[in-house]
Image (tube, rainbow, N blue to C red; front, side):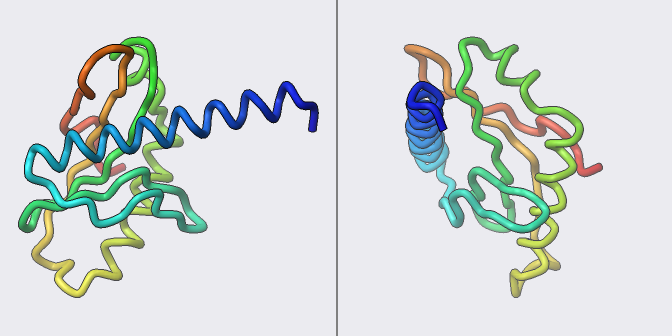
Length: 124
């Protein structure tokens, strides 16, 4: 792999990790407990899983220049992969029958506090 490509990839990973950290902080300050970070399955990955009582947030974190760009960055294929991974996570929870799941996004924008967008999509 060329050094330039490797350097860009490392910068993107650092930016993503920083974005997930900021998103976690923003959700914790709203009273949510982060129960998973970068939850990976064969079907897909979930950036953050947060919980407050019986409400579980499946959170996609997007680091973009604008809120519109962040919202547009979640396509239908991404929605399906995230929902499939969420189903796997949910099945493994002993109290899954009483949990409510919501798919949210946290947009990490330049020089702004992260923006929490609820119900970014519904289960497909």
